[in-house]
Length: 390
Image (cartoon, rainbow, N blue to C red; front, top):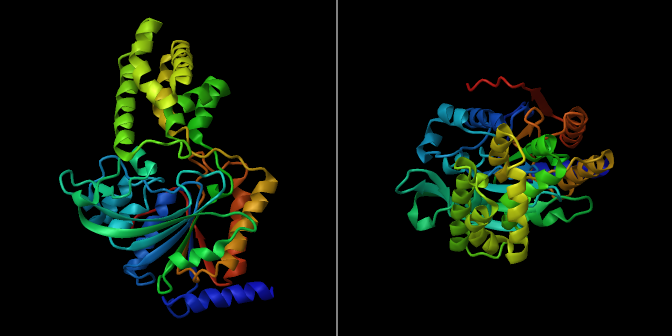
């Protein structure tokens, strides 16, 4: 008890953004993660959050730093239209470009490997030719999303500091403070799939085709771009990515796999050898050819749709692991002495297949209980799927 009181005092004393008198900490719970954004914008309008310089501390199995396809930068200045275009994986960077968020701490569980740990500083801006929203960071995460552009090609740039931290019990969270300005208002953002997550794309492939076939598809589409395996420079990575996309188009859309095996091998070999090495390339081509010729038309469409996303985290935590993650969450919030949050947002992410349906209610209850223990005036409101953009 005494420890928690100290944690509350530290949090409150570090936060220069003062809450309005008599108001509790607003805690919004939504089903879809992007639906927290209208509440954040409303809080900015009502001056419960500052217009700029906001820090988001983001607990999630996913960084959510993508962009919608062909997302025009100017869309961020029409919030109602923007809210309609955004999805669960791409709602954090548009408000960076709008000037609201300038610091992001991604607190990830140990099974989330999309970025390596550390500090990333880069620009979010409008591409001078296409008008699309882009970033100046050439990490493979952004290369895969086709959202990278050299900073010289960007206009109206907004800086972002991103700190990636694995949160585990008995970890060392204190160093996180170095990356959070004392004057910054903090949004504590929690996706409940931080504690346990499925990869719904991989799960659907396993359900349709079996585990062995699903993992073969995972290796073909994603094995060469694992963060721990990448040895390509930026230009070579982009080139391989482009060639791989075109190869998959030929295989799937032009039914190249219906040709004799030697024709299929001749098509795939040059790129597969570069990506997988000679021996594994030869094996993969034969296995992939056999698989594609042994499944039905609707399953082929599933392979093409789900394949690129099979590297998302897939870790259905047991009860002991969930309790361990909850303790790590509590410990991090206590011991890092983060500023008291100006706002808390929580996403369930269950209906879309990420947080396991049989675990969601207990995880939500435990998470909210921790938040109320840490800050006694947390005002929780739970919303369903029908969030209105007012």
